[in-house]
Length: 555
Image 1: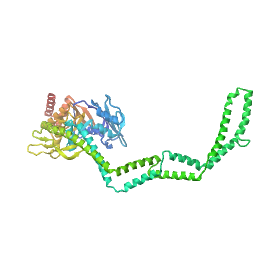
Image 2: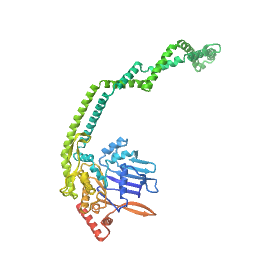
Image 3: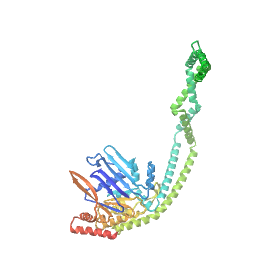
Image 4: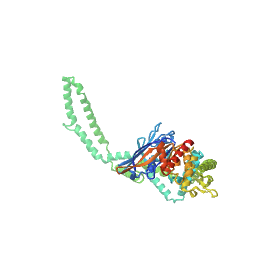
Protein backbone atom coordinates (compact mmCIF):
# COMPACT_ATOMS: atom_id res chain seq x y z
CA UNK A 1 0.00 0.00 0.00
CA UNK A 2 0.91 3.67 -0.14
CA UNK A 3 2.02 4.38 3.42
CA UNK A 4 3.34 7.94 3.09
CA UNK A 5 2.90 10.84 0.68
CA UNK A 6 4.97 14.01 1.11
CA UNK A 7 4.27 17.17 -0.88
CA UNK A 8 6.28 20.41 -0.73
CA UNK A 9 5.53 23.68 -2.55
CA UNK A 10 3.14 22.11 -5.03
CA UNK A 11 0.46 24.62 -6.02
CA UNK A 12 -1.40 25.58 -2.80
CA UNK A 13 0.33 22.91 -0.70
CA UNK A 14 3.30 24.28 1.20
CA UNK A 15 4.34 21.28 3.28
CA UNK A 16 2.26 18.12 3.61
CA UNK A 17 3.19 14.76 5.13
CA UNK A 18 0.31 12.31 4.79
CA UNK A 19 0.42 8.91 6.49
CA UNK A 20 -2.13 6.46 5.13
CA UNK A 21 -3.50 3.21 6.43
CA UNK A 22 -4.98 0.22 4.58
CA UNK A 23 -8.53 -0.22 3.32
CA UNK A 24 -10.84 2.56 2.15
CA UNK A 25 -9.41 6.07 2.66
CA UNK A 26 -11.88 8.91 2.13
CA UNK A 27 -10.79 12.41 1.09
CA UNK A 28 -13.33 15.24 1.17
CA UNK A 29 -13.39 19.03 1.19
CA UNK A 30 -15.10 21.98 -0.33
CA UNK A 31 -14.80 22.68 -4.05
CA UNK A 32 -11.52 24.45 -4.73
CA UNK A 33 -9.93 23.40 -1.45
CA UNK A 34 -7.17 21.53 -3.26
CA UNK A 35 -8.24 17.88 -3.36
CA UNK A 36 -7.02 17.68 -6.96
CA UNK A 37 -3.48 18.42 -5.77
CA UNK A 38 -3.32 14.96 -4.20
CA UNK A 39 -4.16 13.40 -7.56
CA UNK A 40 -1.66 15.73 -9.25
CA UNK A 41 1.05 14.65 -6.84
CA UNK A 42 0.34 10.96 -7.50
CA UNK A 43 0.46 11.59 -11.25
CA UNK A 44 3.92 13.09 -10.84
CA UNK A 45 4.99 9.97 -8.92
CA UNK A 46 3.62 7.90 -11.81
CA UNK A 47 5.93 9.72 -14.24
CA UNK A 48 3.48 12.08 -15.90
CA UNK A 49 4.83 15.24 -17.51
CA UNK A 50 5.70 17.93 -14.94
CA UNK A 51 4.28 21.44 -15.37
CA UNK A 52 6.63 24.02 -13.84
CA UNK A 53 3.60 26.20 -13.26
CA UNK A 54 2.78 23.89 -10.35
CA UNK A 55 5.66 25.30 -8.29
CA UNK A 56 4.27 27.36 -5.43
CA UNK A 57 4.76 31.09 -5.87
CA UNK A 58 7.97 32.20 -4.17
CA UNK A 59 9.56 28.73 -4.21
CA UNK A 60 12.30 27.57 -6.60
CA UNK A 61 11.32 23.92 -6.63
CA UNK A 62 8.49 21.62 -5.63
CA UNK A 63 8.79 17.98 -4.65
CA UNK A 64 6.65 14.89 -4.18
CA UNK A 65 7.70 11.74 -2.35
CA UNK A 66 5.76 8.48 -2.00
CA UNK A 67 6.56 5.41 0.08
CA UNK A 68 5.04 2.07 -0.93
CA UNK A 69 5.06 -1.01 1.29
CA UNK A 70 4.70 -4.05 -0.96
CA UNK A 71 4.04 -7.71 -0.16
CA UNK A 72 4.89 -9.04 -3.62
CA UNK A 73 7.93 -7.41 -5.19
CA UNK A 74 8.88 -9.69 -8.10
CA UNK A 75 7.66 -7.34 -10.84
CA UNK A 76 9.03 -4.21 -9.18
CA UNK A 77 12.38 -5.94 -8.51
CA UNK A 78 12.60 -6.90 -12.19
CA UNK A 79 12.11 -3.26 -13.24
CA UNK A 80 14.71 -2.14 -10.69
CA UNK A 81 17.17 -4.73 -12.02
CA UNK A 82 16.62 -3.59 -15.61
CA UNK A 83 17.72 -0.12 -14.51
CA UNK A 84 20.72 -1.26 -12.50
CA UNK A 85 19.14 -0.83 -9.06
CA UNK A 86 19.13 -3.22 -6.11
CA UNK A 87 15.97 -5.25 -5.30
CA UNK A 88 13.80 -4.14 -2.40
CA UNK A 89 14.72 -7.10 -0.18
CA UNK A 90 11.96 -6.33 2.32
CA UNK A 91 12.43 -2.56 2.22
CA UNK A 92 9.91 0.06 1.16
CA UNK A 93 9.89 1.49 -2.35
CA UNK A 94 10.46 5.26 -2.17
CA UNK A 95 9.84 7.40 -5.26
CA UNK A 96 10.77 11.09 -5.19
CA UNK A 97 10.21 13.72 -7.86
CA UNK A 98 11.71 17.23 -7.79
CA UNK A 99 10.51 19.87 -10.26
CA UNK A 100 12.59 22.98 -10.76
CA UNK A 101 12.37 26.02 -12.99
CA UNK A 102 15.03 24.66 -15.36
CA UNK A 103 15.24 20.92 -14.67
CA UNK A 104 13.39 17.94 -13.22
CA UNK A 105 14.88 15.10 -11.21
CA UNK A 106 13.45 11.79 -10.09
CA UNK A 107 14.80 9.24 -7.65
CA UNK A 108 13.95 5.66 -6.72
CA UNK A 109 15.26 4.59 -3.30
CA UNK A 110 17.72 7.47 -3.48
CA UNK A 111 19.13 6.65 -6.94
CA UNK A 112 18.54 9.04 -9.86
CA UNK A 113 16.42 7.54 -12.66
CA UNK A 114 14.66 8.65 -15.86
CA UNK A 115 10.96 9.52 -15.80
CA UNK A 116 10.17 6.60 -18.10
CA UNK A 117 11.12 4.24 -15.28
CA UNK A 118 8.52 5.89 -13.02
CA UNK A 119 5.88 5.13 -15.65
CA UNK A 120 6.88 1.46 -15.71
CA UNK A 121 6.77 1.23 -11.94
CA UNK A 122 3.52 3.19 -11.78
CA UNK A 123 1.73 0.66 -13.98
CA UNK A 124 2.20 -1.87 -11.17
CA UNK A 125 1.63 0.43 -8.20
CA UNK A 126 -1.37 2.70 -8.78
CA UNK A 127 -4.62 2.39 -10.73
CA UNK A 128 -5.90 5.97 -10.93
CA UNK A 129 -9.37 6.84 -12.19
CA UNK A 130 -10.69 10.36 -12.57
CA UNK A 131 -14.01 11.70 -13.87
CA UNK A 132 -12.95 10.89 -17.42
CA UNK A 133 -10.53 8.01 -16.92
CA UNK A 134 -13.35 5.50 -17.23
CA UNK A 135 -13.07 6.18 -20.97
CA UNK A 136 -10.39 3.48 -20.98
CA UNK A 137 -13.33 1.07 -20.83
CA UNK A 138 -14.15 2.15 -24.38
CA UNK A 139 -10.86 0.77 -25.66
CA UNK A 140 -11.43 -2.67 -27.19
CA UNK A 141 -7.75 -3.47 -26.63
CA UNK A 142 -8.14 -2.68 -22.92
CA UNK A 143 -11.35 -4.73 -22.78
CA UNK A 144 -9.47 -7.71 -24.19
CA UNK A 145 -6.77 -7.29 -21.53
CA UNK A 146 -9.51 -7.30 -18.86
CA UNK A 147 -11.00 -10.49 -20.28
CA UNK A 148 -7.58 -12.18 -20.36
CA UNK A 149 -6.96 -11.17 -16.75
CA UNK A 150 -10.34 -12.56 -15.69
CA UNK A 151 -9.65 -15.78 -17.62
CA UNK A 152 -6.18 -16.10 -16.06
CA UNK A 153 -4.92 -16.17 -19.62
CA UNK A 154 -2.18 -13.54 -19.38
CA UNK A 155 0.56 -16.14 -19.90
CA UNK A 156 -1.27 -17.58 -22.91
CA UNK A 157 -1.65 -14.08 -24.34
CA UNK A 158 2.08 -13.41 -23.88
CA UNK A 159 3.04 -16.70 -25.61
CA UNK A 160 0.64 -15.95 -28.44
CA UNK A 161 2.03 -12.42 -28.83
CA UNK A 162 5.59 -13.80 -29.06
CA UNK A 163 4.52 -16.36 -31.70
CA UNK A 164 2.66 -13.64 -33.61
CA UNK A 165 5.79 -11.46 -33.65
CA UNK A 166 7.88 -14.36 -34.96
CA UNK A 167 5.33 -15.03 -37.69
CA UNK A 168 5.12 -11.38 -38.80
CA UNK A 169 8.92 -11.08 -38.89
CA UNK A 170 9.11 -14.21 -41.06
CA UNK A 171 6.44 -12.79 -43.38
CA UNK A 172 8.32 -9.49 -43.68
CA UNK A 173 11.58 -11.31 -44.45
CA UNK A 174 9.84 -13.39 -47.10
CA UNK A 175 8.16 -10.32 -48.64
CA UNK A 176 11.47 -8.45 -48.66
CA UNK A 177 13.24 -11.22 -50.59
CA UNK A 178 10.27 -11.71 -52.91
CA UNK A 179 10.40 -8.00 -53.73
CA UNK A 180 14.15 -8.10 -54.31
CA UNK A 181 13.62 -10.98 -56.72
CA UNK A 182 11.76 -8.60 -58.97
CA UNK A 183 14.58 -6.03 -58.82
CA UNK A 184 16.77 -5.37 -61.89
CA UNK A 185 20.01 -7.24 -62.54
CA UNK A 186 21.88 -4.02 -61.83
CA UNK A 187 22.39 -4.87 -58.16
CA UNK A 188 23.70 -8.35 -59.02
CA UNK A 189 26.12 -6.87 -61.57
CA UNK A 190 27.34 -4.33 -59.04
CA UNK A 191 27.94 -7.01 -56.39
CA UNK A 192 29.84 -9.17 -58.89
CA UNK A 193 32.00 -6.20 -59.85
CA UNK A 194 32.75 -5.34 -56.22
CA UNK A 195 33.71 -8.92 -55.37
CA UNK A 196 35.90 -9.19 -58.49
CA UNK A 197 37.51 -5.85 -57.69
CA UNK A 198 38.50 -6.95 -54.20
CA UNK A 199 39.44 -10.54 -55.04
CA UNK A 200 41.53 -9.31 -58.00
CA UNK A 201 43.74 -7.41 -55.57
CA UNK A 202 44.75 -10.66 -53.86
CA UNK A 203 44.74 -9.10 -50.42
CA UNK A 204 46.51 -10.91 -47.61
CA UNK A 205 46.25 -10.30 -43.90
CA UNK A 206 49.24 -8.27 -42.64
CA UNK A 207 50.45 -7.49 -46.17
CA UNK A 208 49.75 -3.77 -45.96
CA UNK A 209 51.83 -3.32 -42.80
CA UNK A 210 54.72 -5.35 -44.29
CA UNK A 211 54.82 -3.38 -47.54
CA UNK A 212 54.56 -0.05 -45.72
CA UNK A 213 57.56 -1.05 -43.60
CA UNK A 214 59.61 -2.16 -46.63
CA UNK A 215 58.64 0.97 -48.56
CA UNK A 216 59.68 3.22 -45.69
CA UNK A 217 63.13 1.60 -45.72
CA UNK A 218 63.48 1.62 -49.51
CA UNK A 219 62.29 5.21 -49.86
CA UNK A 220 64.86 6.34 -47.27
CA UNK A 221 67.74 4.11 -48.47
CA UNK A 222 70.20 6.94 -49.24
CA UNK A 223 69.63 8.54 -45.86
CA UNK A 224 69.99 5.16 -44.09
CA UNK A 225 73.41 4.63 -45.83
CA UNK A 226 74.49 8.11 -44.84
CA UNK A 227 73.47 7.67 -41.21
CA UNK A 228 74.96 4.15 -40.83
CA UNK A 229 78.31 5.21 -42.40
CA UNK A 230 78.33 8.28 -40.18
CA UNK A 231 77.85 6.19 -37.06
CA UNK A 232 80.49 3.64 -38.14
CA UNK A 233 83.02 6.35 -39.07
CA UNK A 234 82.57 8.17 -35.75
CA UNK A 235 83.13 4.88 -33.98
CA UNK A 236 86.27 3.66 -35.82
CA UNK A 237 87.70 6.00 -38.49
CA UNK A 238 90.70 8.21 -37.68
CA UNK A 239 92.87 8.67 -34.65
CA UNK A 240 90.19 10.67 -32.84
CA UNK A 241 87.43 8.04 -33.26
CA UNK A 242 85.49 6.79 -30.30
CA UNK A 243 86.93 3.28 -30.38
CA UNK A 244 90.50 4.66 -30.74
CA UNK A 245 89.94 6.82 -27.69
CA UNK A 246 88.51 3.86 -25.81
CA UNK A 247 91.69 1.86 -26.47
CA UNK A 248 93.68 4.55 -24.69
CA UNK A 249 91.18 4.50 -21.85
CA UNK A 250 91.47 0.69 -21.72
CA UNK A 251 95.26 0.93 -21.16
CA UNK A 252 94.73 3.39 -18.31
CA UNK A 253 92.02 1.23 -16.76
CA UNK A 254 94.32 -1.80 -16.97
CA UNK A 255 97.10 0.12 -15.18
CA UNK A 256 94.64 1.31 -12.48
CA UNK A 257 93.59 -2.25 -11.80
CA UNK A 258 97.20 -3.32 -11.40
CA UNK A 259 97.87 -0.59 -8.83
CA UNK A 260 94.59 -1.10 -6.90
CA UNK A 261 92.83 -4.41 -7.65
CA UNK A 262 89.79 -3.16 -5.69
CA UNK A 263 88.95 -0.88 -8.62
CA UNK A 264 88.43 -3.88 -10.93
CA UNK A 265 84.87 -4.42 -9.80
CA UNK A 266 83.94 -0.73 -10.32
CA UNK A 267 85.57 -0.58 -13.78
CA UNK A 268 84.32 -4.00 -14.93
CA UNK A 269 81.54 -2.54 -17.06
CA UNK A 270 84.02 -0.65 -19.24
CA UNK A 271 85.13 -3.72 -21.16
CA UNK A 272 81.57 -4.81 -21.99
CA UNK A 273 80.76 -1.27 -23.16
CA UNK A 274 83.81 -1.29 -25.41
CA UNK A 275 82.76 -4.64 -26.90
CA UNK A 276 79.18 -3.43 -27.52
CA UNK A 277 80.43 -0.34 -29.39
CA UNK A 278 82.70 -2.53 -31.53
CA UNK A 279 79.71 -4.76 -32.38
CA UNK A 280 77.66 -1.65 -33.21
CA UNK A 281 80.30 -0.53 -35.70
CA UNK A 282 80.26 -3.98 -37.37
CA UNK A 283 76.43 -3.96 -37.45
CA UNK A 284 76.38 -0.55 -39.20
CA UNK A 285 78.84 -1.76 -41.85
CA UNK A 286 76.87 -4.96 -42.48
CA UNK A 287 73.54 -3.06 -42.64
CA UNK A 288 74.91 -0.71 -45.33
CA UNK A 289 76.07 -3.66 -47.44
CA UNK A 290 72.57 -5.22 -47.26
CA UNK A 291 70.74 -2.07 -48.38
CA UNK A 292 69.67 -2.43 -51.99
CA UNK A 293 67.93 0.52 -53.61
CA UNK A 294 66.07 -0.79 -56.66
CA UNK A 295 63.84 1.88 -58.28
CA UNK A 296 61.69 -0.79 -59.93
CA UNK A 297 60.95 -2.51 -56.60
CA UNK A 298 60.17 0.84 -54.97
CA UNK A 299 57.73 1.62 -57.77
CA UNK A 300 56.02 -1.76 -57.38
CA UNK A 301 55.54 -1.17 -53.65
CA UNK A 302 54.08 2.29 -54.30
CA UNK A 303 51.65 0.82 -56.83
CA UNK A 304 50.58 -1.82 -54.30
CA UNK A 305 50.05 0.82 -51.62
CA UNK A 306 47.92 2.78 -54.09
CA UNK A 307 45.75 -0.34 -54.55
CA UNK A 308 45.30 -0.56 -50.80
CA UNK A 309 44.25 3.09 -50.52
CA UNK A 310 41.81 2.82 -53.43
CA UNK A 311 40.08 -0.26 -51.98
CA UNK A 312 39.87 1.28 -48.51
CA UNK A 313 38.37 4.44 -49.95
CA UNK A 314 35.72 2.42 -51.82
CA UNK A 315 34.87 -0.36 -49.36
CA UNK A 316 36.13 0.44 -45.87
CA UNK A 317 38.66 2.24 -43.69
CA UNK A 318 41.01 -0.72 -43.39
CA UNK A 319 42.03 -3.84 -45.30
CA UNK A 320 40.13 -5.90 -42.71
CA UNK A 321 37.00 -3.82 -43.41
CA UNK A 322 37.48 -4.35 -47.16
CA UNK A 323 37.70 -8.13 -46.68
CA UNK A 324 34.57 -8.07 -44.49
CA UNK A 325 32.76 -6.05 -47.17
CA UNK A 326 33.69 -8.72 -49.71
CA UNK A 327 32.26 -11.51 -47.53
CA UNK A 328 29.03 -9.58 -47.01
CA UNK A 329 28.76 -8.92 -50.73
CA UNK A 330 29.32 -12.61 -51.49
CA UNK A 331 26.62 -13.58 -49.00
CA UNK A 332 24.18 -11.10 -50.51
CA UNK A 333 25.05 -12.15 -54.06
CA UNK A 334 24.62 -15.81 -53.17
CA UNK A 335 21.24 -15.02 -51.67
CA UNK A 336 20.13 -13.07 -54.73
CA UNK A 337 21.42 -15.69 -57.15
CA UNK A 338 19.78 -18.48 -55.17
CA UNK A 339 16.59 -16.67 -54.27
CA UNK A 340 14.46 -19.60 -55.23
CA UNK A 341 15.91 -21.87 -52.55
CA UNK A 342 15.95 -19.04 -50.00
CA UNK A 343 12.35 -18.16 -50.76
CA UNK A 344 11.30 -21.75 -50.29
CA UNK A 345 13.06 -21.93 -46.91
CA UNK A 346 11.48 -18.67 -45.83
CA UNK A 347 8.07 -19.87 -46.99
CA UNK A 348 8.48 -22.96 -44.82
CA UNK A 349 9.47 -20.74 -41.87
CA UNK A 350 6.37 -18.61 -42.44
CA UNK A 351 4.16 -21.70 -42.55
CA UNK A 352 5.67 -23.15 -39.36
CA UNK A 353 5.24 -19.82 -37.56
CA UNK A 354 1.64 -19.54 -38.75
CA UNK A 355 0.85 -23.04 -37.47
CA UNK A 356 2.19 -22.05 -34.05
CA UNK A 357 0.16 -18.81 -34.11
CA UNK A 358 -3.03 -20.71 -34.97
CA UNK A 359 -2.36 -23.33 -32.29
CA UNK A 360 -1.69 -20.83 -29.50
CA UNK A 361 -4.47 -18.61 -30.79
CA UNK A 362 -7.01 -21.43 -30.51
CA UNK A 363 -5.88 -22.19 -26.95
CA UNK A 364 -6.21 -18.51 -26.03
CA UNK A 365 -9.60 -18.31 -27.75
CA UNK A 366 -10.87 -21.30 -25.78
CA UNK A 367 -10.02 -19.60 -22.52
CA UNK A 368 -11.60 -16.36 -23.65
CA UNK A 369 -14.79 -18.04 -24.85
CA UNK A 370 -15.14 -19.90 -21.56
CA UNK A 371 -14.51 -16.76 -19.47
CA UNK A 372 -16.55 -14.20 -21.48
CA UNK A 373 -20.05 -15.25 -20.30
CA UNK A 374 -18.79 -15.63 -16.72
CA UNK A 375 -17.29 -12.14 -16.78
CA UNK A 376 -20.51 -10.72 -18.23
CA UNK A 377 -22.54 -12.40 -15.48
CA UNK A 378 -20.15 -11.23 -12.78
CA UNK A 379 -20.19 -7.62 -14.02
CA UNK A 380 -23.99 -7.75 -14.34
CA UNK A 381 -24.23 -8.82 -10.69
CA UNK A 382 -22.10 -5.89 -9.57
CA UNK A 383 -24.11 -3.54 -11.81
CA UNK A 384 -27.29 -4.72 -10.10
CA UNK A 385 -25.72 -3.83 -6.75
CA UNK A 386 -25.00 -0.37 -8.15
CA UNK A 387 -28.59 0.35 -9.18
CA UNK A 388 -28.76 -1.25 -12.65
CA UNK A 389 -31.37 -3.82 -11.63
CA UNK A 390 -32.54 -4.62 -15.16
CA UNK A 391 -29.41 -3.78 -17.11
CA UNK A 392 -27.92 -6.29 -19.54
CA UNK A 393 -24.16 -6.62 -20.00
CA UNK A 394 -22.49 -8.98 -22.46
CA UNK A 395 -18.93 -9.71 -23.56
CA UNK A 396 -19.24 -10.85 -27.19
CA UNK A 397 -16.23 -12.11 -29.15
CA UNK A 398 -15.86 -11.54 -32.89
CA UNK A 399 -13.45 -13.63 -34.96
CA UNK A 400 -10.82 -11.70 -36.89
CA UNK A 401 -10.35 -12.42 -40.59
CA UNK A 402 -6.64 -12.85 -39.95
CA UNK A 403 -4.67 -13.27 -36.71
CA UNK A 404 -3.99 -9.93 -35.02
CA UNK A 405 -1.44 -9.03 -32.40
CA UNK A 406 -4.04 -9.47 -29.65
CA UNK A 407 -5.36 -12.82 -30.86
CA UNK A 408 -7.80 -14.49 -33.22
CA UNK A 409 -10.76 -12.41 -32.04
CA UNK A 410 -11.75 -8.98 -30.79
CA UNK A 411 -14.13 -7.99 -28.01
CA UNK A 412 -16.56 -5.10 -27.68
CA UNK A 413 -18.41 -4.85 -24.37
CA UNK A 414 -22.17 -4.52 -24.95
CA UNK A 415 -24.47 -2.69 -22.55
CA UNK A 416 -28.20 -1.97 -22.26
CA UNK A 417 -28.80 0.05 -19.07
CA UNK A 418 -32.60 -0.04 -19.29
CA UNK A 419 -35.15 -2.79 -20.05
CA UNK A 420 -36.32 -2.92 -23.65
CA UNK A 421 -33.25 -1.17 -25.02
CA UNK A 422 -31.11 -3.07 -27.50
CA UNK A 423 -27.55 -4.00 -26.62
CA UNK A 424 -25.02 -1.56 -28.02
CA UNK A 425 -21.29 -1.09 -27.60
CA UNK A 426 -20.57 0.34 -24.18
CA UNK A 427 -18.96 3.45 -25.67
CA UNK A 428 -22.23 4.32 -27.44
CA UNK A 429 -24.71 3.71 -24.63
CA UNK A 430 -23.48 4.72 -21.19
CA UNK A 431 -23.56 8.28 -19.89
CA UNK A 432 -20.65 9.61 -17.82
CA UNK A 433 -22.45 8.82 -14.56
CA UNK A 434 -23.32 5.33 -15.77
CA UNK A 435 -19.78 4.75 -17.00
CA UNK A 436 -18.42 5.49 -13.53
CA UNK A 437 -20.57 2.72 -12.08
CA UNK A 438 -19.74 0.36 -14.95
CA UNK A 439 -16.05 1.00 -14.26
CA UNK A 440 -16.57 0.17 -10.60
CA UNK A 441 -18.49 -2.99 -11.53
CA UNK A 442 -15.67 -4.10 -13.85
CA UNK A 443 -13.05 -3.36 -11.21
CA UNK A 444 -15.08 -5.35 -8.68
CA UNK A 445 -15.35 -8.31 -11.05
CA UNK A 446 -11.58 -8.24 -11.61
CA UNK A 447 -10.65 -7.63 -7.97
CA UNK A 448 -9.13 -11.09 -7.50
CA UNK A 449 -7.04 -10.86 -10.66
CA UNK A 450 -5.93 -7.24 -10.28
CA UNK A 451 -2.55 -7.16 -8.57
CA UNK A 452 -2.18 -3.37 -8.43
CA UNK A 453 -2.09 -2.49 -4.71
CA UNK A 454 -3.54 1.04 -4.78
CA UNK A 455 -6.70 2.23 -6.54
CA UNK A 456 -7.54 5.93 -6.61
CA UNK A 457 -11.06 7.02 -7.49
CA UNK A 458 -11.24 10.76 -8.08
CA UNK A 459 -14.89 11.84 -7.90
CA UNK A 460 -16.12 8.98 -10.08
CA UNK A 461 -19.30 9.14 -7.98
CA UNK A 462 -20.23 12.40 -9.71
CA UNK A 463 -23.80 12.56 -11.02
CA UNK A 464 -25.03 9.92 -8.59
CA UNK A 465 -26.69 10.35 -5.23
CA UNK A 466 -28.88 8.84 -2.56
CA UNK A 467 -28.99 5.07 -2.40
CA UNK A 468 -26.80 4.78 -5.51
CA UNK A 469 -24.05 6.78 -3.82
CA UNK A 470 -24.21 4.44 -0.85
CA UNK A 471 -24.08 1.44 -3.19
CA UNK A 472 -20.99 2.91 -4.87
CA UNK A 473 -19.45 3.32 -1.43
CA UNK A 474 -20.31 -0.26 -0.42
CA UNK A 475 -18.71 -1.53 -3.61
CA UNK A 476 -15.55 0.43 -2.91
CA UNK A 477 -15.64 -0.84 0.67
CA UNK A 478 -15.67 -4.40 -0.66
CA UNK A 479 -12.81 -3.62 -3.08
CA UNK A 480 -10.87 -2.27 -0.12
CA UNK A 481 -10.66 -5.76 1.35
CA UNK A 482 -8.24 -6.61 -1.49
CA UNK A 483 -6.78 -3.21 -2.34
CA UNK A 484 -5.96 0.05 -0.68
CA UNK A 485 -8.58 2.52 -1.98
CA UNK A 486 -8.33 6.33 -1.96
CA UNK A 487 -11.74 7.81 -2.73
CA UNK A 488 -11.85 11.56 -3.37
CA UNK A 489 -15.55 12.31 -3.11
CA UNK A 490 -18.33 14.84 -2.62
CA UNK A 491 -20.77 12.14 -1.47
CA UNK A 492 -21.32 11.81 2.30
CA UNK A 493 -22.71 8.28 1.83
CA UNK A 494 -19.34 7.15 0.42
CA UNK A 495 -17.23 9.18 2.87
CA UNK A 496 -19.07 7.68 5.84
CA UNK A 497 -17.92 4.20 4.82
CA UNK A 498 -14.20 5.07 4.80
CA UNK A 499 -11.99 3.43 7.39
CA UNK A 500 -10.08 6.70 7.66
CA UNK A 501 -11.38 10.12 6.65
CA UNK A 502 -9.27 13.14 5.66
CA UNK A 503 -10.43 16.66 4.85
CA UNK A 504 -8.68 19.16 2.58
CA UNK A 505 -9.10 22.75 3.79
CA UNK A 506 -7.83 26.16 2.71
CA UNK A 507 -6.02 28.41 5.14
CA UNK A 508 -5.28 32.13 4.68
CA UNK A 509 -2.19 33.53 6.36
CA UNK A 510 -0.38 36.81 5.64
CA UNK A 511 -2.12 37.25 2.32
CA UNK A 512 -1.10 33.72 1.26
CA UNK A 513 -3.36 30.75 0.71
CA UNK A 514 -2.37 27.20 1.42
CA UNK A 515 -4.14 23.85 1.39
CA UNK A 516 -3.94 21.53 4.38
CA UNK A 517 -4.95 17.91 4.88
CA UNK A 518 -6.06 16.65 8.27
CA UNK A 519 -7.75 13.54 9.54
CA UNK A 520 -11.18 13.90 11.10
CA UNK A 521 -12.60 11.61 13.74
CA UNK A 522 -15.56 11.53 16.12
CA UNK A 523 -17.37 14.90 16.23
CA UNK A 524 -15.17 16.47 13.58
CA UNK A 525 -16.12 13.72 11.17
CA UNK A 526 -19.79 14.24 11.96
CA UNK A 527 -19.32 17.97 11.26
CA UNK A 528 -17.70 17.26 7.89
CA UNK A 529 -20.42 14.82 6.84
CA UNK A 530 -23.06 17.33 7.97
CA UNK A 531 -21.40 19.98 5.81
CA UNK A 532 -21.49 17.62 2.85
CA UNK A 533 -25.17 16.98 3.54
CA UNK A 534 -25.95 20.66 3.16
CA UNK A 535 -25.14 22.43 6.40
CA UNK A 536 -24.53 22.18 10.12
CA UNK A 537 -28.14 22.03 11.16
CA UNK A 538 -29.25 19.56 13.78
CA UNK A 539 -30.99 17.46 11.13
CA UNK A 540 -27.83 17.33 9.03
CA UNK A 541 -25.81 16.23 12.07
CA UNK A 542 -28.33 13.52 12.88
CA UNK A 543 -28.23 12.33 9.28
CA UNK A 544 -24.42 12.27 9.43
CA UNK A 545 -24.50 10.30 12.68
CA UNK A 546 -26.93 7.81 11.16
CA UNK A 547 -24.65 7.34 8.14
CA UNK A 548 -21.69 6.60 10.40
CA UNK A 549 -23.77 4.29 12.56
CA UNK A 550 -25.00 2.42 9.48
CA UNK A 551 -21.46 2.12 8.16
CA UNK A 552 -20.32 0.77 11.52
CA UNK A 553 -23.07 -1.83 11.65
CA UNK A 554 -22.43 -2.99 8.06
CA UNK A 555 -18.73 -3.40 8.67
